[in-house]
Amino acid sequence: SQTIHQWPATLVQPVGSPLSLECTVEGTSNPNLYWYRQAAGRGLQLLFYSVGIGQISSEVPQNLSASRPQDRQFILSSKKLLLSDSGFYLCAWRYKGTDTQYFGPGTRLTVL
Amino acid sequence: DAKTTQPPSMDCAEGRAANLPCNHSTISGNEYVYWYRQIHSQGPQYIIHGLKNNETNEMASLIITEDRKSSTLILPHATLRDTAVYYCIVRVSTNAGKSTFGDGTTLTVKP
Image 1 (cartoon, helix red, strand yellow):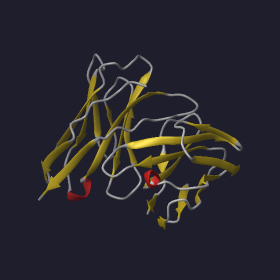
Image 2: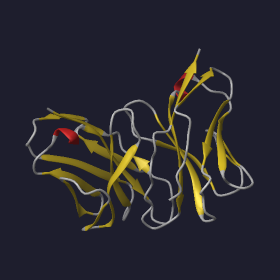
Image 3: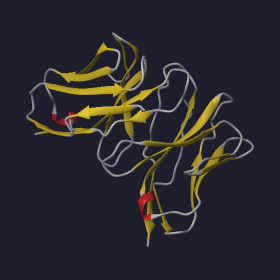
Image 4: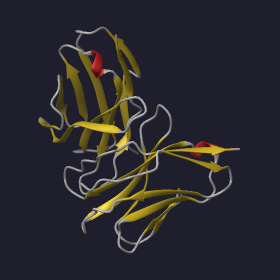
């Protein structure tokens, strides 16, 4: 069976500090991968998606970046966090050729 | 992708059917209707999807109107564990598979 992992579960970081959130998928190969952010009480905003290793598409310009160094690894990064980067970050994967996305447990980031 | 409109909140009595509406009046012929739900502080969970026929699975039923401009997600016997935010999404089936999640409907199941 397939599983998706995200870590850490919660994170508190000062403004201006760097960020690295990791997402890994097990039990599948060559998935599409997605990073979403969710503000409190709001819907999900798609940040990045990837259809393959090294292939990243950005949906919203901001101070975040994403990388896919391995087939089942998706990393969200920032060099300098802003207060507005606080939120619930969700990673998701999807089989190519299907439409259902499967979400990870999320990382709750608080920037102080 | 077509925009969807959902009521911000709904209540339902435990054991009764929960009917969650979604308007998608600008849907195009190749766009599917998807429903996900998100229990507090967890990632969204896929529920069901359809193109134009009604669909049913172990979790819910999806009723799509004949003109496809609206749909209803039905939870036949709501339980307290069904309390969640329910998202209706309309999009084309593409390789990228990008989805836009709006604010959804917060369903509260009450004892």
